[in-house]
Image 1 (cartoon, rainbow over the protein chains, first blue to last red):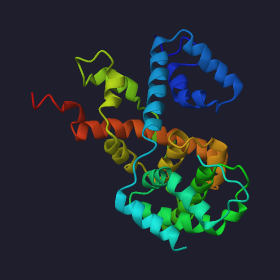
Image 2 (image 1 turned 180 degrees about the vertical axis):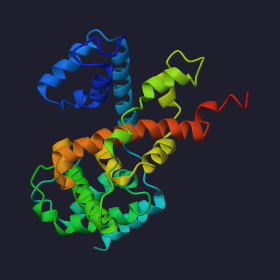
Image 3 (image 1 turned 45 degrees about the vertical axis):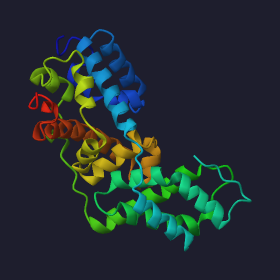
Image 4 (image 1 turned 90 degrees about the vertical axis):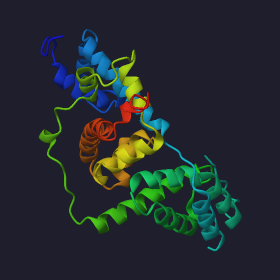
Length: 80
Length: 197
């Protein structure tokens, strides 16, 4: 796909993809990105990968507390 | 998430809340600071106990404790770093991990290159990548994409204009992609198994 075949070039679309997913850009920019994605396969690939990175980050959201840390913090609260 | 009733403001109720929310709190603290996660949680628990009576009925106790934790973190960050070193936007604009993976093709036998690339990162790898990001970029990224805070909430919690938070999220994402790639190269993450046969 060419760099400037749409109202916005690929570089602009890619730069705004996460904000597009977050709805953090103006509605007219949201539309421009959407329009670009309607015909640009490469940017659709970028979009899918942005979604994957977001899933990847959210999947690492919680971890176990080491037993000794848990014990110390619970004791701390007991002694408050 | 634990919802708290107004009649349950006893120390036992607080202890119960802490027990159920400790994994989430500790995980968030570990992502925000390289060292001192336990101290950050401890200070949070102290402040939380002092203001437990102000928690609205039915409010999500876990979210409330996380908010306190981010406030403590913000105050610690201010004391540590008198002035914030922002990166120039132009330094970071030209990297796409998606394109880099296609160009470099580090997993030539993979049918799903991008998914497999991310799948090679274990929890500790991701943690190390996050730790390599400057705190001012890491914190909004963690709060938005790992703990689900909205950008407006993050701006309020970190006491920064919304535009600043959006710019930091943008640079943080860019830095994250660069760091994922650099880390994979440096640690030969994608070659595990190849060398061993």
